[in-house]
Image (cartoon, rainbow, N blue to C red):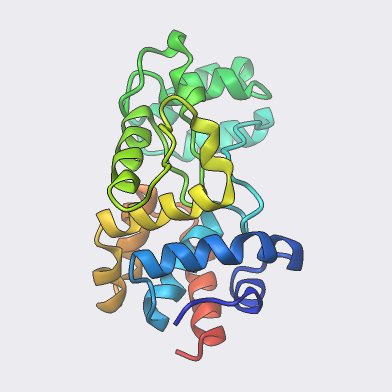
Length: 217
């Protein structure tokens, strides 16, 4: 089973125009990474749909109001990087580059905050690949299966192209054994591997239920 444009519109909630841009890349990714059963496909579409705002957002925005950023930082786990940014909200609000560097600098393969790596390697693609180490890993994983793969560490913006956005999501899905989890009805564990937590749990579950219904599962 591979998704049609109509499936994407109904399951993901994207527009007809967006579905027409993504149906080819998503089908290619699903076929390449065996995301072909109703359970697997529903879980995949739910997760990438949430992460990308129904395929409308292929790069992490990070442009938060002071109120929203304070809410995010205060709600993050104690001792986490995001929680530690609470005293800096006034400087980082409406400052996407500064926030990206502060939130992601010095971890996930990125150099220190002042290097600019945090913002450069912010979340991109359908599943929000984040950090220089992950950009490098996705480059290597895709190069094993496909020709002409760009080096995403040198050209991170290429993950905003639908084909690479979808294939990178598929490669991540396979690397994290998400098909096995979908087969075992462990959707929340997939969320853990995609998100590193359970952020957006209710929306992900709602999307999953909708996709299952659309796919007749």
